[in-house]
Image (cartoon, rainbow over all chains, first blue to last red; front, top):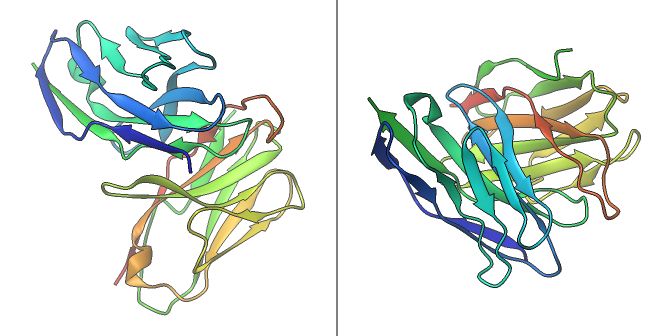
Length: 111
Length: 116
């Protein structure tokens, strides 16, 4: 079945450092790909998405590019802030069905 | 516009007790979902309701029942709680389900349940 694998955390960075969180997927067909973020004590929020190969999703300084050839959707940000500390989930979706999530990566940014 | 609301926020149960988690959305969405979140496991789908009047099992339905009370409300019931059901439960909703479109899911704040 379809699955998502993300790098294990926690990821600990200093403010203004570059962030990469790796995500790869296994799926039949052409899934849509997503990054969700969960701030402490809150529910999940959609951060960005890409619905076809080579699409780049972006939001709040975060970016991810849908790479079909490497089945990847890595999350990047050029300069992280303390307020970016959260749990980040990579997810995929096929034809409007339920989301399949990765296990989540905890990011901790210190000043 | 409150989005997706869940009650209660926290609950402690003893093994064998029952309870119902409530979820409501005010976005006129057709589809609703229940997930559980466990450390190191991500989110796993328990049940979903593609439209009012329908419910279907997800990945981990054992020990749970659901009711789509109306278009706004989708409840999750634990008939006889077990320690393995200690988790954080999230409700979500989306405009639609199926077909070739992706419908963004909107999540509630979660219910933290502990079963002792």
